[in-house]
Amino acid sequence: MTTVLDKQTRDAAVHAFVIGVGAYRHLPGGSGPLMANTLGLEQIQEPALSARAFLDWLTGDYPHPSGVPLGSIELLMSTSDDPYRYDGHDIAPADLPNAQLAASSWIERCNANKANVTLFYFCGHGFARDHQYLLLEDFGQAPLNPMSTSIDLNRMRYGMARCEADTQIFISDACRQVKWDLLKTFDTLGDPLIPPIMGGNADRNTPVLLATRKGGTALGAPGQVTYFTQALLAALRGAGGEDPGNNDTWVVRYRKLADAVQDLLTYGPFGPATGERQCCRTDGESENVILGHLPGPPLVSLQIDYDPPESAEVATLSLDSSHRNFHQTRNQIAGPWQLKAPASCWYQLQASYLDGTSWSRPVAVLPPLPRVPAVHTRRSNAPSNLAPDAP
Image (cartoon, rainbow, N blue to C red; front, side):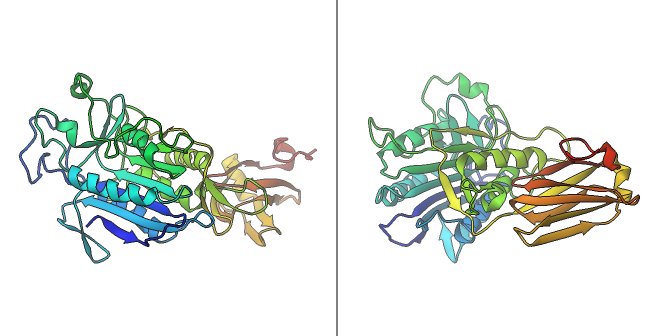
């Protein structure tokens, strides 16, 4: 089966199409004939784990836009467990015929209401040329046209112009390496699943979030959710939150989401301990659409540094917010102060020293990864932007 949830509503709803591909028939270790040129690809575990994590977010703590609940999920999974089991059901493998069938069911539901939100998520192998190509389980089935069983994400987005839904979100957690074997192919590559048409819904929002830059690799630790999907889910759960009206109504909007994912990939825990971090990219045409409402201010991971580091041993810090009913203190302890606090612009940071001097300043604690400027040893050494009234 491909449909794992269908509330059969014609009211505004979110309709998701999720694909995870880690098992490939024609790559080494696959169940079918080996491709003559595997382009360096192997079987991988991470897509199934990542797609499942995305599903858990969808069915668990998805931050519904006001009045737009989850309406349906189409799911395809290709893993070493054949068939993949989800919620007590056997899930169809992510090959081209099943993807075409699932896309037909998906767009039919998406098309039922102009206020619907369509959400497409893919995790697996991918390549880039002029477009982004997402490789399905039967990639390489046709020896003379191995890319015929891949998804052309760009043309799929163009094809979604036939859909009435005004918000159409596309997320690709796949590599974007450019292979010479693809560059020299004089033909259209891939299948759009939803063929492009002339005209259609020209005013729709079509934000696209790509896991890496063109030519880049989508990374992940073996046997774990990919770094991009980890960062994406952290951003969706609050690290990409903002309060645009300054009225404590927290939402996740497209542009802040993309910025938060990149910050988390670059500076956060979602990346290799050494070496280059990946850079996500955006595409499509979109206003800064609201992707979800958060139930309240997100909990923010905050780091306060000391300069020089030994100043931590003579300073007592406190972070307070009457707005959030929050108070934490840190006595003379070596190392940066790492803590979590609910997001707000209204915090007061105070430093008290062993010689009896002190200073305080307002600080904002906002997602995704705020870092307070260094706290200096002496009040007289505090920089002007940290303690503006210091003598």
